[in-house]
Amino acid sequence: MKIPIAKPYIGLKEKKYIIHAINSGWISSLGEFIDKFEKTFSEYIGVEYALTTSSGTTALHLALTALGVGSGDEVIIPDLTFVATANAVAYTGAKVVTVDIEEETLCINPEQIEAKITEKTKAIIPVHLYGHPANMEEINKIAKKYNLYVIEDAAEAHGAEIKDKKVGAWGDCAIFSFYGNKIITTGEGGMVVTNNRELYERMRFLRDHAMDHSRRYWHTEVGFNYRMTNIQAAIGLAQLERIEEIIERRIKIFNRYYENLSSLKGIRLNFTANWAKNVYWMVYLIIEDFDYEKRDMFMKKLKAYGIDTRPFFYPISDMPMYEYSTTPVTHLLAQKGVCLPTFHDIKDEEIDYICETIAKVLESFRS
Ligand SMILES: Cc1ncc(COP(=O)(O)O)c(C=O)c1O
Image (tube, rainbow, N blue to C red):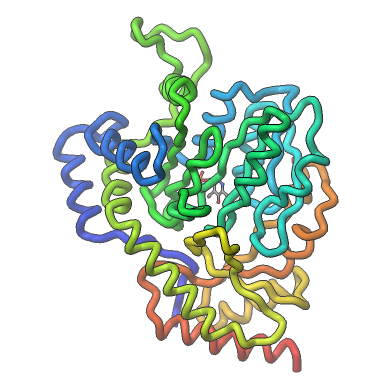
């Protein structure tokens, strides 16, 4: 057996829409699929505006820039996240300030945010890690008290909910990624959503090289080309039209892993808070007595059985570009987490095989 960690779910509809886009001649960043994808996505999330971008990273950079975040400012992010969250802040010249995560949700711990707020703090970026929502109600209370912007990083959590309201609809704006391993994909691509018309207009302006609306090729600011192509949007629309099916399958995949593995001692799988809908972007295991060395050995052993896995992210504050932070939960869990194959087409027999192998390999660590 050879089981990858992730695999896109591309069907006939995606191919049909791609051909339609190509035949229309609109292969760059104008075209009907861009408009339809943005409109359908905003309706799906339950917000007024959605703007396609070339990636989740550029969506984050665009949002931060449009909100006026820059040199001399500080932006709060969780210490456990993909590096793009931090890098987008660094691109603006602002300082990355990391906060520890909650042990259960793996998302930013709202109780620890206030201690990191200074005169310079301009925004908070909660990350809905591995498909589980961050505690937006608490985060928004803090943001309101200190007059901070909230940018949700929902790159890994399309369709996740807090009390029936989708992530992406909680902050001043939110970003999504459509990289090939995400819940829905456009190959590479991103989206930024908001209810704020002024912010939307500003992001659209900056995304297209900040070109003057009434004077073509006249620019008064340095903007970007962060656009998505119509061909990518064609794939995205087809994916979005069956996102419910995709999420349902992910929940079933998690349940099968859970049935097989939850009785094993010293491990735990994804947690879901009672206020949350988890979309299980990645099913993961946290193995109690693991450190980096044991974790890497465990992954290597699974690889020998044809099972691809991936480690949790390293703490951002351990990376040389960013300031070290004392974040005990992040530093502990980063060493113990392993993500398991989670993709639409994985067969139940493959999940069972993975679980049997995990039990066997874990046993070998303990005997
Ligand atoms: C939490 C998080 N933020 C941001 C990104 C950046 O998205 P992209 O890879 O589309 O630039 C990713 C994904 O890769 C991510 O996982």
